[in-house]
Length: 92
Image (cartoon, rainbow, N blue to C red; front, side):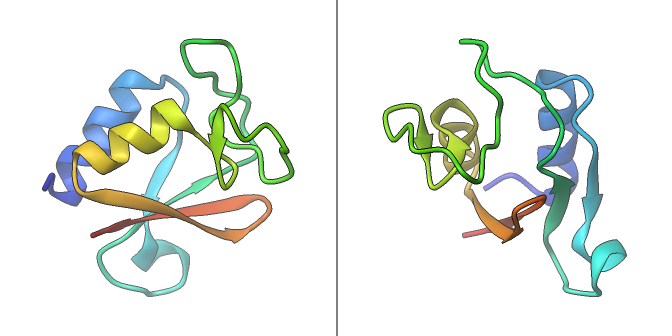
């Protein structure tokens, strides 16, 4: 499992413009990462990383692009929506 700091570095490097902060900065919860899900950062196929309202179940798993979701899982993390514009990442 990747540490939180290592995952932040990896995600910011892979997805330029993705703004990540700790959950402590958001609401005091420990050990997580939060991000705005309203940015239009794209996966390799051109689709946005996050789409809370999507019905495209081939590319997205609960609104998180499969490419991004797979990367999280490979490093021992998962995504969880806080609300339609905010997404959290937690260690498994």
